Length: 74
Image 1 (cartoon, rainbow, N blue to C red):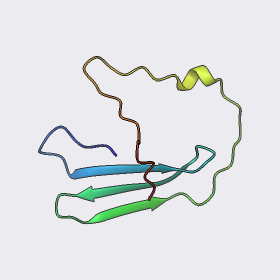
Image 2: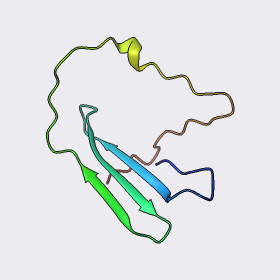
Image 3: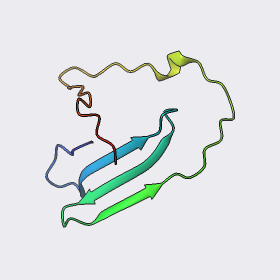
Image 4: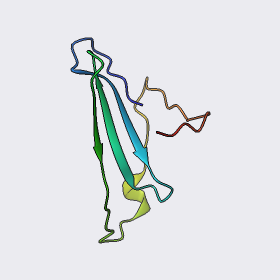
């Protein structure tokens, strides 16, 4: 779940969901009024192999990385 840091944002919450193969399956965005917009990805086709180093993540200074200790799923 991603939460905006600024109060002026349109959405108060964004959730990204992946399947077991790490393919993006849905994006849910919750507005301040409580409305939820969900975009579902039904079909993914792998077209190229990319180097793993392309997806290396280094958290910026002052940020916090949080695991999903409850293994929650939507």
